[in-house]
Length: 492
Image 1 (cartoon, rainbow, N blue to C red):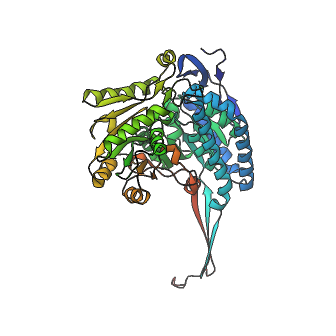
Image 2: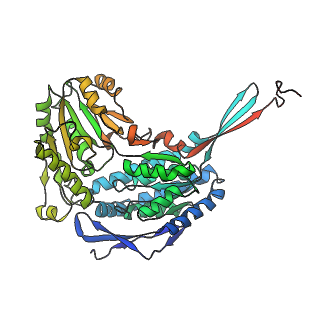
Image 3: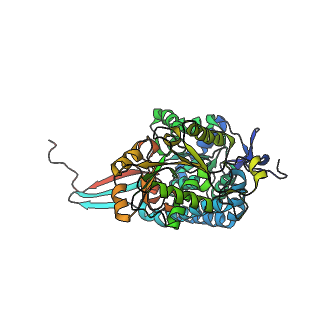
């Protein structure tokens, strides 16, 4: 156990809320070390938080937009000031390299600042004048929002919900994942402290807390990022009270490499490698299967392995030379290994990539050496399922029709990428079923908070980021003001 594990609390009605039971969070680099403890809240605790948020909404919804922006701006500055400490904590509890933790916080701040800068314009009343008077189209707050967030990018996938919800005049109860609860709780506390008590509440726990957050009749909207199977349960739980939903779910994102892609472009090849292995592959929008035109397949694989071996250095997240830390938890590591073992058993070749910097540390933690899988089939689990770990299959395709078919042959449709001559790549991109398709880049490298993000098919409902991400936390309210009040076609 760490000498000084931190202890975090729930936050209900602006006050720290103690619980009898606490859950330890281990360091995936060294599982013998406990980084800290998070509370284990009950359904009763969660109901109390929802009740507080429900009561607070009646007054918070009447606050001015200027006040909301001012409060959020103060919170942004507090997060900026605390970034070094928060990034350190995130790397310890999550396992991601320190540069990666700092990058996550930077993306979070970019979005929060975008939201503050644009919310007034996006949510302003639209007034339409016409022959029979005028119509006002207002964007009203929805009510209490339940936010349930995952472990892979806990801070950015929480602030992506908190900022637009509070700026629109909603209140919120947020539950982070127990697999990365510490750093995000510090961020939520900084934000909550800048807002009136009850506006932003924080609870922790397991499935029973999630059930309350998704079924309680006082909750008006659910914002969830996580797995598709969990989302199905959430939709069922919410059905009785017809709640608003934003669901950002799993992805099995395809990368198509066209015959006019330059395999000797070292920077482009490095971008592909990073798009596969950043955060040890534990990103919903990472490129998880690569399809390469058969005419360049052999040379692509050769150059890809060269690029991967140059960039990938596995080890201690706090070592400045490290690019990839451990997998977040033992269960995930075992799942990814099972996909690799299955591919091997079916005759696929598994090539290890990069360098392990500290073998003793590697054997202690939940580390996995990144691998590329060659010779897998389209229907193998390594291709069909979302690996969410440091392995990627590369498959050849016959022609563009074949490539598009392979890319679209999935229940998922979050992001995708096409690599090659720009106009050619754009034409191919138009035929891919995905919420976002990037050209000659992929994953976080191509993310832009100014534009909407979300999936099609079983990768989700609704959009986050961009103007759509602000509107997602509002109801459209039409107010008609007619000049002619007596309708001529109604008999007296």
